[in-house]
Image (cartoon, rainbow, N blue to C red; front, side, top):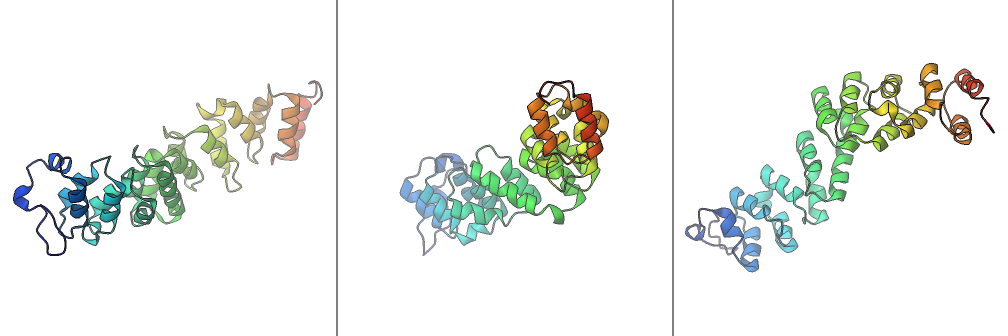
Length: 256
């Protein structure tokens, strides 16, 4: 397990019981600190340390400075994913990971929200450089924020899969359809989607886009209060002829 080292104290191998978890949960805080700093720390023992959700911050800080274990991918992942790892350690660590490791961190429930956001941001910033297979996987299994970004992918297959992502929320769909770079096929897919096309806030967002068909624009305008519809059309990028048709169809409404 941990070998004796002249530069750091640690329990001899004979003192470590068969159950690493039992050992880790019963040693003193001082021994935890020594173990975390020991350059001879093994992968198994480092991972067992990191399974403790109550691990003190100073122990995590020591682990984050132990270059011997930081060479080990599983340890880096566990350290970056720990709920109490200091941000000055976890954020630089996530920049070292590849696509699927980042996705795993972003979806780990115990990871702090700000670290998840930083991980999502890093994934999104790399979308133009990852393969089609990786983009398809991210669209299918990524977080809601990542799935929302995948709606803007130039490949219709990626976009369609992202629309079915169970983590995708209305907020991210609205954000995507209103982006200037939103593609016509994405706007039309959302406008005809069995789930998303019935959301009132999404219908309003779609009415503000450039690519909504006349039939859908007329349908989505029905039932909107006159002042709201007027405001939507004033800021809409729909062609003038479609706006005029909507106004004609709704001209009987009071104060339109």
